[in-house]
Image 1 (cartoon, rainbow, N blue to C red):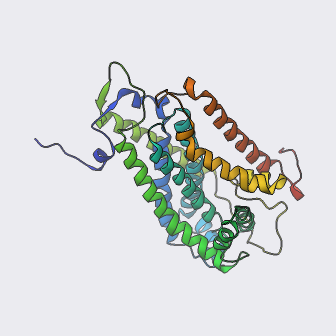
Image 2 (spheres, rainbow, N blue to C red; image 1 turned 180 degrees about the vertical axis):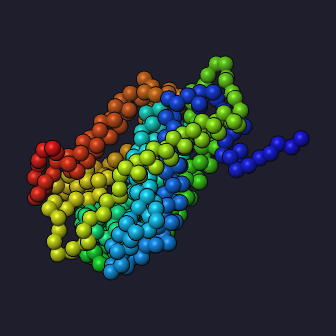
Image 3 (cartoon, rainbow, N blue to C red; image 1 turned 90 degrees about the vertical axis):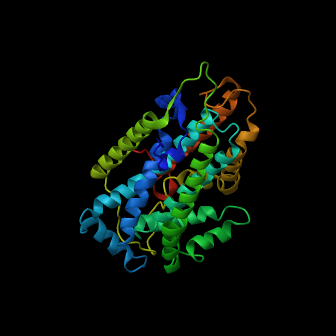
Length: 348
C-alpha cells in the first residue's frame, strides 16, 4: 500500500533523533518564528485591503482600521505584535544557533539566516512609517539619517529610502512598496531557502549519539511543532487583546518631538552615534555584520555542532554574549533613559 505524502513530508526527514523533541535542543524558536511570519502575512493581506499610501489619507485609514472597522483594531494589534515578536524571536534563534555551534558545516544556511534577519529589519523599518503619525514620521527620519553614515552607499541608501533628501510624498509610497512588496518576497524566498538547506543538511545539527535513537517524524515531531505553533499563536492573540498598536497625533514636519528617536531596534545605534558618528554609525555596525558572517570560518573548534557552550567555543560564545548584551543595554539607555536634548534621565 502506497504511503500518503503531503507537504510536511518534504520538510522533514522520515525519521529524526529523539533529542529533537527535547525542548532544550531548539527552544522551539524556529517554529515560533514561522508562526509569527504566517500571522504577519495573514494580517498584512487584510490590512492591505483598507490602507491607502497617500499622505492625505494614510493617517485617517489607520484610525478607521483601529477604531471603526470590525475587528480592525485586533488585526492591526496582531500585525504589530507579531512583527516585533518575529524580530525578537529571530535574534534569539540566531543566538541559539551560535551558542550551540549549529553553524558548523552549514555556512550557507548561516548566511541565509543572517539575510533573513536583515529582511525582517527591512520589513519592520518600512512598516514603521505607514501610520504617518508624529512618532513614526520622525523615527523614520532619524533611522534614514543613521543609514547615511554607512560608507560609500550610505547617502544613496538614505535618498532611496526617503525618495529624496527629506521625507515627502515619495517616502510613504516607497515605504509601502518595500513593506508590502519587496520585504514579503524576500522573506518568502529566504525562508524557503533556509528550510530547504536544513532539510538538505539532514535536519537539526546534533552531536552523534550512541546508540542512535531514531523515531518517526510523523506524528511525534509534527505534534511537537504544532504545539509550539499553537502556544505562540495563543500568546500573540492574548497580548493583542491587552496591548494596542500605538497611534499618535498626525505627523507634523514642522514640530519634531524632543528627543526624536529611531525605531527601538535601531535606537542602540542612535545612542552610539550620539557619542561617535564614525564608530557608532560605521565601524560597529559593519564590524558586527562581518563578524557574524565570518563566524563559521573564524571559530575553530573540534566540538560538534548542537552542543550548548562547548568547551572549544567558550571564548567565541563569551564574545557573542558580550556584544549582544551591550546592544541590549544601549537599546535600554536610548529608549528609556534619554530625554529632551538627548540628556540622561531616570526611566521612572
